[in-house]
Length: 267
Length: 208
Image (cartoon, rainbow over all chains, first blue to last red; front, side, top):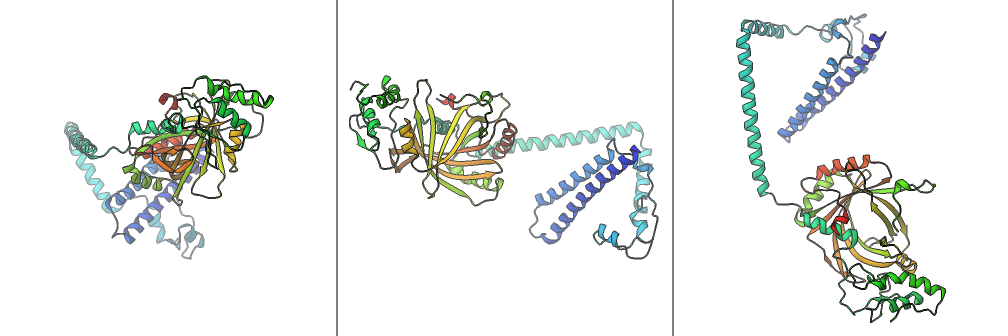
């Protein structure tokens, strides 16, 4: 019972993998047929890489431990008819119209082509002829050549990269980053560079608070009427030297609300 | 006068506490175009959006040492937009695994008498600047590339000068508290902008 379930799951996985593979092949063929004049080598490589990746996943599915031994399963066609079968048409997107005795040997075959079989037999006899030591030596020399080649390629890549970097301009300046972040975070470098004595401004709309402001900050000599909109220059910035005054302002305002005649600040 | 860390606040209903996840970097003026090209490719396909904003930062000095900071922002090029009032808390000191700066964030749209209101409440403007740049979006992430201009005469937003020869690049997400997976997505996106821009979490306290 469990094997049946496993078989079912495996088949589903295989079907979806094969469908993906088919789709990538279709798009690759389309690309080759229709865009051959604009095709670039990297684009072709991309398609090949995609196909190779999908074949890889297909292999992984087949090798998965939960996959039952498909080798032990046999597919037998139960009914062969020369009539058109709509179901098969639909499933194969119109490619296989009939499930007849011409179509079945091609679609259900498991043996490779005769030519391929011949080549395989040849390779097997050749391999059997070489002694195990000879085979080992050949393997080792192949590995050595591959690693030499890899080393050469990576060295070349490294050298060209460092040469390229020397030509590349720096695209950002860390000092600037810090300056900008500080400006946005707490206004470093943005404080209005007002010379002392040129005054802050008194908000025209609030006479009570305005009086307090004019009274409190001792350096404000000239009350200016502010712009009709909203801007109020910094009155109690961190950089200002007046130590005690700014801190007293809000409490001064509160006091003012309670007793209007109180003037808490010496002037 | 800072709001207590989000983890300590009881859930009393109402709005969810939103956190802002932030990564910052900068790009030199001459490399701005390449950055914009890359962002146009990486981000959601939208009309490129530019903005010109005027931001004022207001402080309320209380009895405690650290003042309460509110940021008021208005659009200078788009008419009819509401003003934007924002509170940003202290960055949460999370574990090193968190890739972005995380801080409590409250955003409110207001009418245009915001500054009068703030002054009435006792706030005083600490500094202001003009920000001009581009906005991109990718899902919930917002990428802003802008230049900061210093305002030479208080109240006059026409006489401005750039603060530096670079544009500030910010990647931020506003999300409910506790979604640390957001910072992983942000880091992956930041990887795609290297080596043009290095987006990293910069603690403002280190720059004081």
